[in-house]
Length: 209
Image 1 (tube, rainbow, N blue to C red):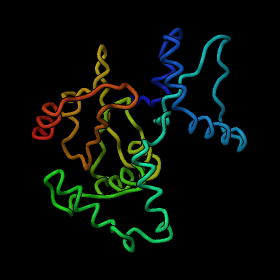
Image 2 (image 1 turned 45 degrees about the horizontal axis):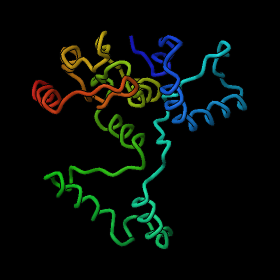
Image 3 (image 1 turned 90 degrees about the vertical axis):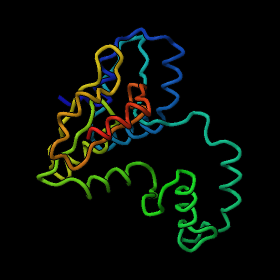
Image 4 (image 1 turned 90 degrees about the horizontal axis):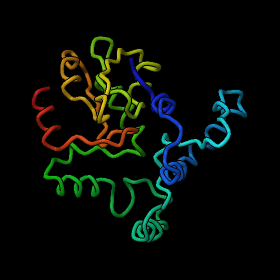
C-alpha cells in the first residue's frame, strides 16, 4: 500500500523534540498557504490538533534561510535580461546544459533543464510510462510521479515500503517489481524519511535493473 508523506506524518507520535518541530515547521510556509487556499475554495482543512501539539510541516521542502548571497548577486546581475527567453539571453540555456555536461562528464543531450522538479518528473512520466509500462516507486517518498501517473495518466504504480527500522528506501524490495516497468523512481535522500542510499547501493541497483 502506498503511503503519502502526509500519511507518514500522521503516523508519527506526538512529543517530538521542540527544536525539531520548530525547524521543520519553518519549512512549511508554502504548504500553509496552500491549505488556506483549499479552505477558501471549499477543500479539506487540516484536522484540529489537540492542545499543546504543534504541526510539523514536511511537505514543501522550503529552505528557511533563503538563497545565499552569491546566488542573489547572480540573479540580480542578470535581471536586466529578465525580459528575454532562455534561448535568447547571454549566456544561453544551451551554455548551461554544456557546462553541466562537462562537470559530470556527460553528453549535452543527457542534460534536461526544468522549472522545478514537478515539470521534469511529470514529463518523465509522460515519456516513459504507458498502460503496459508501470511505475515503480518506494513508499513513502516524494509523491509527484505516483500521483500524476495514477490520477492523470491512469497508469499502474507498484510500490515497496521503506525498511521498518531505518526508514531507508528498500532497493532489494523494489527490484522484483521492475520487470516490465517504464520508469523506476528513487528520491535520494528520500523525502520525507531523510534517509540516503549510498552511491555504491544506487550503482548496484541500477546494474541489477
